[in-house]
Length: 217
Length: 361
Image (tube, rainbow over all chains, first blue to last red; front, side, top):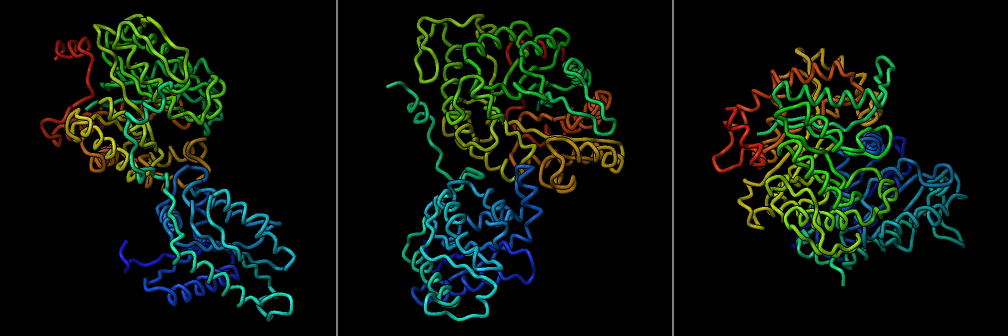
């Protein structure tokens, strides 16, 4: 890889309204990551935000038809090809939103292997903040991603509050999370998972080897 | 080039009338469709294999044997034969018998199936799908080529001094295709043996098909069976035609919107753009089919899915008339004119069958 090739940060936002606080949080996290990546190394940083709202019909179409539209395929390959991923969902009915889950249902189960992922969520009340721990982390653990220690939850009230004696305010948490992602990406912990779709990126296993594996010992 | 049709064998309600054919009607319709395919000058009729409702073709060689008795020239094939869950010994016996009955007008396509529970129903583990396909076919290949087989593998009882009977007609096994949509291992398998590779692209964007076929072609050349251009490639496709494009769209839309495999997802317009489904005039079907060649190179077999989405038999037979009279003759000419010398025109034919073709012409 050439030193001039950009590091790719992709943020997936599952916010439904426009403007959306989920998108806002995704942008803040992406900006914090970029800032600390650019400060820490020389390669350019390419940030891309994917709004699942724009892909909602394509996602449903893929679920029932079995193949992605061109726009969805492009978004999926941006996600699997990213050096670092930021995943942000609103909390719906005690978990990530259905749209968020549906999108990640379409990611091959090994395609995020080793990828640093920063998880974040928004909600109307701080009482849902553990969604990050009991829903988001297991999802990305299944996908074999490396989820960073700091996850960021933004309740409505966080957008108008500073930190207190017990916890940092939102800007400090965003900065800390962005720093962790920047460090993971720059530190070379990013391992791009091999996508099985369309399945031809892998080296082909020579047939003799496939046959030999089946011979009785 | 060989043109033909393949059937899934689904029993689907006609959404415009609410009529659902019985299994008996569907099986008889399959025979009528095969006979019609021959009558309108197509080269191949292929049936799927399924072991769950709403599908009827669980016993392909029974149906193909019956069709063989009622036809003279059409090649009988499968789309696909489940190499994972069928005993390769039984496949060897069944298709060799069919070959004798049909005087060599037989080839077949290996596939892994698309219904998860079929594996446990037949005592197999779905996680072993690819290894089953590889081992079972290795045995089938041997059974058709060696008179006495000693064999031991991971998945099946060992064989000592076993002879599969009847032997293939005149000692020439049926030509085999390997069908796969997304597994490079299967493209590799087809290339290794110098067998055909069929990409059933009916639900896939052509770019994906292009990559899979390209892999197969490269590996075919790697194994020394010929150049990449000489590899034996087949593609699927599905169409609905009327003289006027708008009539085709109007008539097919309720079928598309309600069919289990198409409906309730992307619009027919999106679907036709992203997959080979073509709903329009015969000329549009001709133009679309020619674009497949742009993606995968000169290929040897084009199969169309015609009895889909719950279309009544009468309509399917009309569609076959249009396909045979207006589409295939043009495509034959166009593809032949484009095909360079040295690229095979068709998949290899059994000598007994090839001899009948020479006699006719």
